[in-house]
Image (cartoon, rainbow, N blue to C red; front, side, top):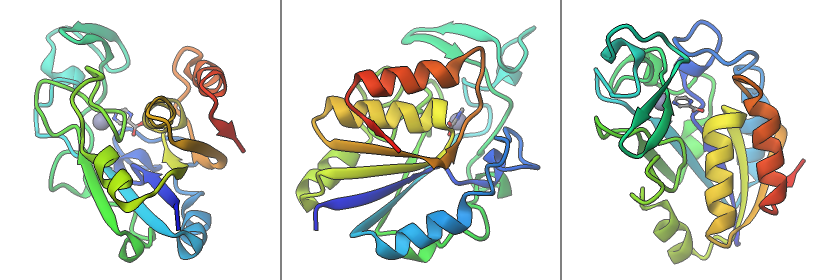
Length: 198
Ligand code: VGL
Ligand code: ZN
């Protein structure tokens, strides 16, 4: 079995009622569960920030959520406080079938750097370890689903393609934020990188 389903950030804070809610984020849970039951390997990611994380607008005087800031590693969107370690917001959606997961990988746990991608933090060099896990299990074909299409799903899929994996994004099992055209840009970038969009 060389096929893995990678479920990105299906957490309460990204679902309706959460701190960084993605419209319709909860709608995709039942079908993701159904996919998990058929997958050869199931990996979940969990956005997992310390309180006061540097990606939170609340940590930057005079700045509001969704503004851009220059971090030492490049431009960064400022977000509302979300997915703080150990909180209900950081927990998986209660209906997500987490018992199916072979691996749960956490990201964004370093105070000074954000991590959208499941493979590399936002400096695009600090690895999360997921690549090694997939390679040592011989998992070469990756299907991505989850939240948010234009941030964590897209950055993960782009890194996976760059690393030489065969990558599909199942768009009907993803939902996006769409900040200043980020949805169209993400879809274009993924297509250009050889990601299959379904
Ligand atoms: C995400 C913004 C900040 C995501 C995570 O899961 O797409 N977006 N942290
Ligand atoms: Zn985050």
